[in-house]
Image (cartoon, rainbow, N blue to C red; front, side, top):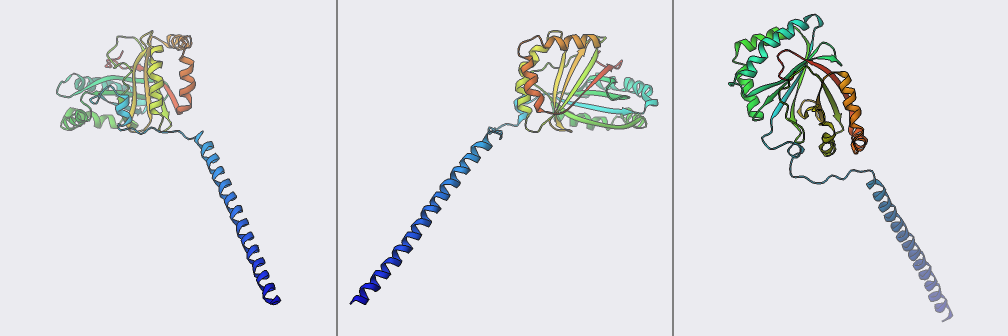
Length: 286
């Protein structure tokens, strides 16, 4: 009898110990999970401070930034010319490009054509506008391949070039459309390589900023790339001379809000450069 009581008492003690261990492990595990969840919530909140939230959009960014769905398409060309061929190159362009610009058979217009003065040397820059977008571009390219004079121009031009590149651009809705100007003017092409994903921010800030840069009619056009170097922005400005450029740019700082635009847009830029350009004789922008 006594033996059976002692056996039952021993079994009860073992069960109590096992239950105690199990309960302790459960408490520790529960506390561990709770602490882990708390840390995860803290990490998630902390990371959210540095992660840009992207709103879902149903339209491409280009549709949000351009004037309408049938916006003009622009092509900008950069030709690096052999230094000894620059005069001959300019003469060749002045003989050929206006004929295409003035011929209604081609749905395109020469916006401007320049030589760089400061920036990359021995360089020519041409800008074309295609009214009707990509279909107009395709039509022009197809017709020019059948133009014997243009093909001869391309052949002669190729002998004078060191390299060439181009980009297809759309125009910002809040900028002026480039129209012919009387000269003499110098032109500044400021090009900005933006960080990917920041084009909408850039557009939002410059939609306000452009109002600060219209007082001397210096704003010619603003564009962003579609093909070529992506997230590239080009701003084209006109000034009477370098002194007028300096005075106009300094005057912008007197307008309330300009400093804020500069403060918030500079971090969006990966790289930027500036060209001062002189119009060729055939350029509609003089």
